[in-house]
Length: 273
Length: 122
Image (cartoon, rainbow over all chains, first blue to last red; front, side, top):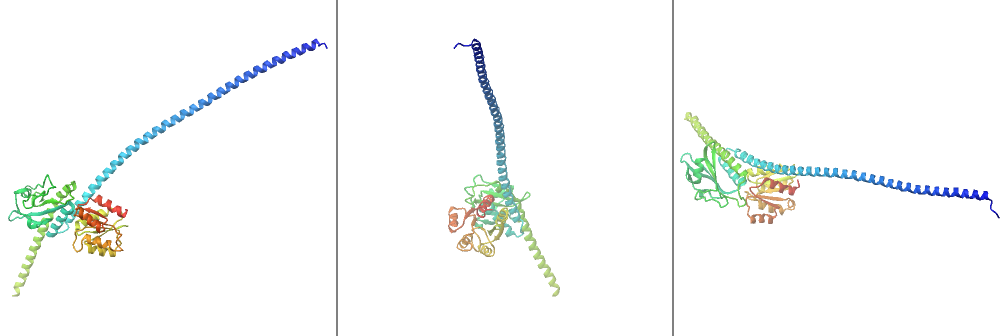
């Protein structure tokens, strides 16, 4: 069968058009592939830039937090330092408080009586309990003989304490000068018989010395003197002296009053005869 | 409110210890001048802690500790000895009798407050 040329031409034309369509389609598919690849590339770029942005933000945040931590650490150290400072100040205030309590009690007790023997007892209590002395004596200046005479003692018999003369030895010098004496070595103890105390406190009213407290040894647990002890020595120097002086005056005035009263009684009785 | 019995013949020390004890919040301080006086106070008051000296007239601190620790009603009351006797053997003797703690004079107030707080948990 012979092919119709017209049909053949048409078929060829159709095939040509079809081929062109096929090529065009293939081109479109290639272009589409390229575009897809490009889109994917762009999406990836966008994504990575978003991540980078996030990382940058997180880094900034971390930096800020680190700065905050450092500042908090600094603040903490500062507060810790302040705390230590407060703690040491608290201890200091407590020490002062305790010292003041000791001084208050000592002074309160010294002036709580006008009885001479009781004043001596209180002085002894203070020297034992608050200072920690083991052996000591209270010596007073006898205005008539000018001797320094022992009137009370603890830890040693009163009779074993010798009298002292003004200006002679440690006790005599303290009584004359009014300056308290502290031995460089307090641990070894002094010598009672030789009149060698380790501490000798002048009992004085203003500049007038009325006697001394001579300490010969300290309690075994007492290793040395603290600031409170020196404050107590100062307090004893003044307050014990005034307490002794007042008690003596009161005793004398009481005695005089009794004598006068007895004398008046006698006078009253006379007219009856 | 914890009650502290201070047994001390020296008025100076009694006042000083009482002063220190009053700094412990809400502590009630009862004073006794010797062991016999302390036993009277123990029978009439509720006591949470005893602070006692050793050298006292009428009845000393060691005798008091011994009586307290051998009495069913008082044996659980902690006793702190405060004394001038600072030798090791004195301390051991007091602790052997039943004293709970031992402080040698002259006392450091802070140390005493700390010790008292450790017993009455103030």
